[in-house]
Each structure stands twice: as structure tokens, then as C-alpha cells.
Image: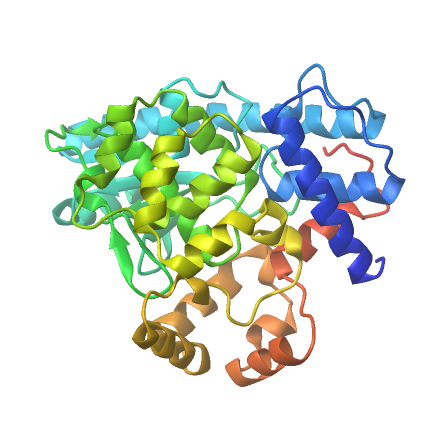
Length: 404
């Protein structure tokens, strides 16, 4: 493993280059060292854009081209499994009289914004009416799924007989988990923003349903990106999703973002980042209107952020990640208290993550006490486990840009 400062610099440099190439293809092939090319593979895997970059023209580097082609093949094969599962979910939901809304990636594919093999999907997200959650869980079990764990945002189901796959980026055999939502909400960082009423169709029918409008899908993508920004876990794929959907949006569609109970103050930071890389995707009038809604500190910081600074490409964990999203002194005080004394729910969520996520297993840092973790964060740079997982995979001696 090279020195972490070298890894960090390489990840940040690669991430910015990948973002520029994805938004405006055809740039010159970087003159990188073998280490830098491997870090670029790690960054593209972490940001979910490897198959999207497998196109012509593109960077002409042999191992890089093999890696991208392999990733696209794995994503395309996995997409077939996901499409078949969605078909079976539709039939089962119709029989059970349950209305389901496939979220985010499934909806973007249904709109034709991506073709099979372009966009990875880690899992299938489904929104269901709270009164139908029990029946939906039952039909998932009938389809061969078992309960994995539950968080405040969703309940996670996994295939009963499919073990996780350790690999860099996407793999065709990775289990397709299902995340069942009864609400669409995010904590930013403590106060929850809820979009359920805007996302769940008023005339939902048994089976799979679409979002009520492009605006509803956009609002969900923006809120999801905001939640990831709050945790400094944004991905380039999130920005690409938003930029593609923006091409379908009219000014009237954008106006619907303001039809909720409060102004969408949280939408400005992700849209600022989209506008940084995809120069003409977001109308200036939308950004100007959001500027008035966004809290001053967050508005100022959002102008400066780059993707590499608010994602796993930064490499270091932040002791107070998300504090800039607090909107009052009282919320800051509650945030600091939660950092020192996590709630029982937060502890359970952490334990579930350690138990179920390959990149967290065997890491002493994540099982240390809250005091020891905070002390470490405040006294020395601590690398992110998700970033280190992909970096180690990319730097494996036998890895040459192809996977079986």
C-alpha cells in the first residue's frame, strides 16, 4: 500500500478527471503512472460510473479499457436479473393487491435514460403504503427473500441462498437485495425532510407504479443526493442521474419542487455540484430561486464544493460531517450531543452495517467505542473504510483490469 497521502491525492485527481470526462467526453488520455491508473479504477468503481465510461471516444489505456468493458458486461448481465425480478415482483404484487413504486435507478431505466449495462444498481428500492408493508414483506419472502436488517429509512431483504461477492466494482453474481420503504425521507443531519406525499402516486394500482411526475423523481434524487452530501458520501453517479433527468424537465416541472410544505432548501447543494460539472443542465433561474431558500452557511459552502471533497475520494473521515447542514444553534447542540452519545437506534444501525457489509468486516476501527473513534478523528487522519476497500481491491497484485 502506498502512503495514504499519495492515495488520497491520486483518488481526488482521478475523481475530478472522471467527472470532467463523463460530463464532456473526448478529453485527452491522462499521462498517469500505473499506480494512478489503478486509483482511477478504484475511483470509478466507488462512484459507480465504470460502465458509463466504456464508450468511444475514450481514454486509450489498455488495462483501463479492459476494466471498463468488464464492468459493463457484469452490469448488463446483472441488469437482466434485476429486470426479471421486477417482472416477478409486478406479478406477485398484482396478485396480492399491493401497489409498489420502484425508486431511483429502476425508474431512470424505465424512462429510457439508461440502457442495460450503463447504470449499476446495488439493489431494488421499493416504496409501499405503510398499511401494505406487512403483505409486501410476505410476498418478498415467497419470492425467496429473508429479512436482513431494518433501519429508520427502510427494511432490507436479501436472497436466502446467495452469499455476498467480494470484488472491485460490479459483479454479475452480487445478490440483488431489496430495500422496502414506507416513507421517503432523509435526516439533514437530524431534522427529517419527508417527500412521501410527493412521491407516492395518488392513483396507485396493484403492481409496479411510476413516480407521479418527473418533478417527483427529481425531488427524490435531489434529497437522496443531499443525504449523501451530508455524510460526505456523494457519488458521481448521483450527479449523472440528476443531469440526465434535468434534460426532461420543463420550468413548470422545476416549479413543482416548491409545492411542498417548506421550500426545498436542501436541493441547492446537489444542484450546485451538478452545475459545476454539467454546465448547462440546471437552469440559472432554478439556482437563483434556491439561493434564497438555502441557509447562508450551506449556500456559501456549496459554491466551493467539488465532488472529490464531498465523497469517499477525500479518503479521510470527518469528525463533524454534516454539521454545516444544521439550521439553528439548537440543532447544532443536538448534533454534537448525538456525536458524543449516539442513540440506541444509531448503535443498532451501526452493528447491522458491520454485520452485513463486506467492506466493514474485520475492521477494528468500526467496532471501537464511540469515545475512541471520536478521539481518533480529532487527533489524526482516519481513512474511510469504504474507500480503502476499493483501493485495496484495485491494488491487488493479480488485478489487471479484468475480473472473472
